[in-house]
Image 1: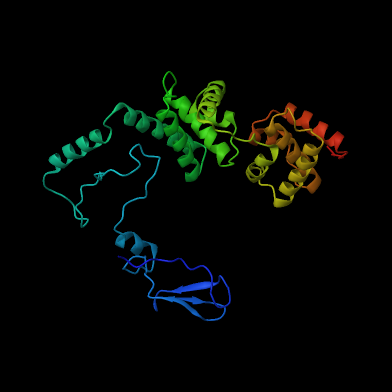
Image 2 (image 1 turned 60 degrees about the vertical axis):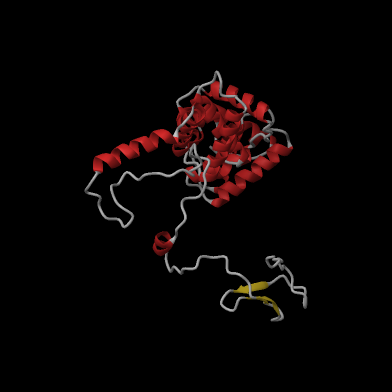
Length: 306
């Protein structure tokens, strides 16, 4: 029988949780009273040492982590396109044979219709996500949503591109990354109504329940793209909080209300941006910005000098 491993989280002497693992001495020591809480601990790290990132990459013997962004989750073998051996030397013989092996290996990685669908869809998902500059965690979440849709047979009768775009929109909502349907539709070169219809369908079938986006969610990104300071962002959030309490945001597009609040805040703080500049960044028409800011300014009794 192996030795039972107990995870110690508290010092038995002083009840402190400030414990330090000293792997050189193989001990767990309390940082408050100095008591040796445990000894002969196992170092679960690698047996080699590295002093920079280059050495870590060279000495590591594990492959890339599992990812949902590849149809086989990155668990299959990949023959590199460069004709080099394991030592990094050029391969001069049997290049034609290596080319044929590489080609067949790429073919057998996609063995059935489901994997072929995933390979196409995840490529499209990565392309649209790159245009939207989405982070890896959002892409992973979108890939998980798409895989669930495939497993439940929700793809039948719908375009791969449309379901992939809807999955990206759902992932953005899950990860609290404000992206509008218009932005996703433009990046995917599709009609926003089609993406919205598919999104509603898969969210209903997969039981995805998400809170609606609020105008405050868009403020940081819009202020960043307009090169506005933190003061403007704070003022805009303050205005939107007051507007929400007066129910001025109900039934109105969140981007329009957010754009109007940013316009008012930029004027009040002294970093004025024109309605045309804000319209260009937010994708909201100048007329909408003008109507919303007049409503907010009137109800909150804010004087905005033109």
